[in-house]
Length: 268
Image (cartoon, rainbow, N blue to C red; front, side, top):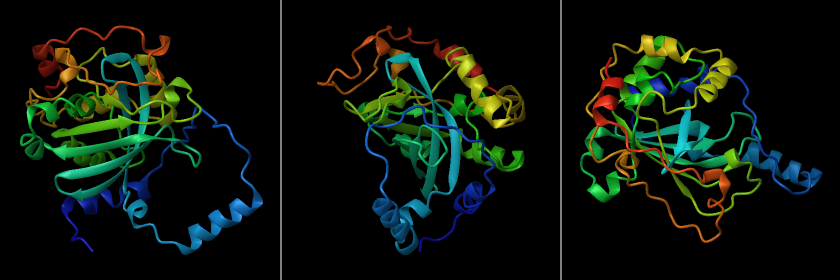
């Protein structure tokens, strides 16, 4: 058993305290309904098998992603995370928070200390979390404000690398194509306000109020190697299936944003 840390002790209570509102998946995959035999097998496995990696998921975060190089293609992302140590967190990402939510992808989160050790080519695949935290867009549903602020005070200095494998935001009923690199927002005016407002209404939160509540959280200087899409370096894996080559993602990437404006938007 790994030793408990202040971070793991705090996150251990997050899922238990979670009072999230149901968010359904937008797609239903093709296939026959689950048979009675399959239901019995599933119930038996649930009762008899231990699942340590799943049981280690002890924090729930809700935020937003967009496709690297296609900032107009945005979606809500439900993160269920496990702490590996004080510098590394791993999350599975779903398109909802109900039982039949679809597994969209994964995100790996590292501290600024570890991120600083990465080579430039690797840093280009990661995104900063400072604006997500300071803007109020990233939330930990169902926990008291003081606990959420403590969690955000840690996350504001982290970086994430995210791959989506099932693109239910495009109503893909199966996980088609190759994984896509995702990014996080870095400045005001990038996230679709209707998307944020719909999430806020569903969870009964106010992103604007959370921005105010997090004013005392110090925004770090962003490593210049992160958020490479802002410099026109929007990496994606070439997709031989053309699952991402249609009209859904045909709009050009937004021009690189002003680094000075980004820095200003992340100030308390």
